[in-house]
Image 1 (cartoon, rainbow, N blue to C red):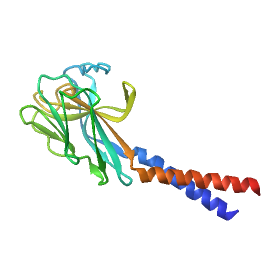
Image 2 (tube, rainbow, N blue to C red):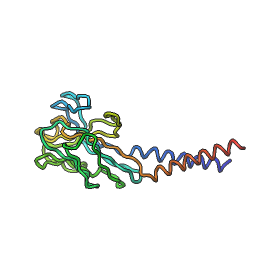
Image 3 (spheres, rainbow, N blue to C red):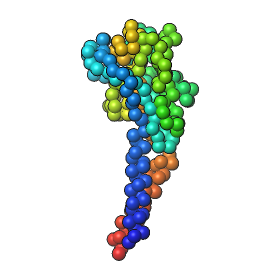
Image 4 (tube, rainbow, N blue to C red):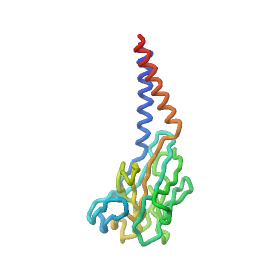
Length: 204
């Protein structure tokens, strides 16, 4: 009986570990602001002037290695902004079709390695420096956009006098993390152990 209990506990632990992997990203708020222009991107609800936005950076918390995917969701800007996945060496452009994605395997905890750029060389680095008049804002968490749910949706503000003024719709991305295949293998092992334990309990 003890063996069965230990196996069940071990399998449950593996399942919890696999579930915890879904919480691999966290937005760290460093400031707040009010919109001085409406957030108005096709496919989203309009967020009005005066609505609050959290400013900050998106961090990877683990565990292990996970595939982080960045998806271009649209823009409302007079500039030619860009997004760079610095770890993978990928970029997303305003000329890309909405829904275009790039991915990198991330294992180091801390701010994800990406940045936004305005068409005049103004950068907002995730977890780093923001050039004057630029900033990164949180649009939503576990957010349904079209038919896809994104862990986080972020918006870039390219210029509005100060980092606290603007609409944060100048380049919008969805970010999600998915465990690497070995995490799924652990999950299957856990399910198998639970099934084996329950079967042995029935036999006895």
